[in-house]
Length: 323
Image (cartoon, rainbow, N blue to C red):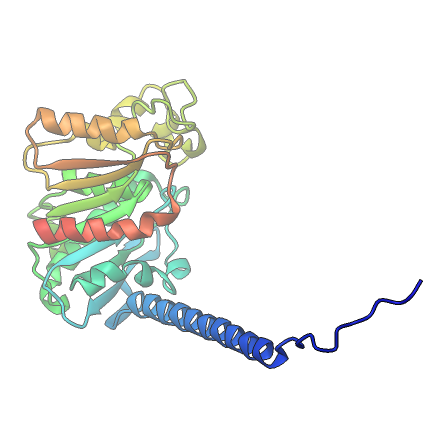
């Protein structure tokens, strides 16, 4: 069998064109990658810029004493303040550790600072070192102290808002429903000031300690949340005294027509502080014809969610409207 023959007149492949086409494709891919890198860098830079607003910051301002310990808040004044203040009640499980939030909490309040609000990060003594009753007294003292020194902080004492989440939300609602003038004969002039606030925007607050509803903290015996049995002092473990104490610490029982406008964000999949806690508060407020209480329900969200920081923009709009 003879070997196949080739036609010497058949044209050879255009190798120069193939190589040139490959170079063009490679260059386009490289250019695309470079553009993507630049866009990502610009986006990251923009995010960093947004969440590191220029502000004048003072840490560790002492507003009172509790059990021999200083009660403190950190303050940040934006470059162009609008005269209003927002107090962030830094509290989770009724615990507050200022040293753990100073490095990053002001970044989370960037939307407030960029909108001109002077921000105060308020810490309190934590349970079980102190009782939750004392914690309520601490945040009242913080509002009074800031109002008393309003001229020093260059804020309007009649334009104070508060925000927080979970136990922080509970403390905000205690201020909203029970904040007011202190004793006129108090030796310390700070304690004579009002602890009333003018607007509230919060996440998933505890509103009813007398009825824990479907919470995983409900032991079913009518007592305090099961993880906080020792957080209310001797009265918290006394079945006869607990109902009166629980009522006194439950904002839902203290709603009134003069309370400030309140915005609440709550997830409908929250099992720690169920949505019903916020719904009860809204219903009670409507019954007394209180100022607006707006409840926004986040579908499928539990006790906190990743995008909650973005919801601070809703809080800014709320404060813009009511402060």
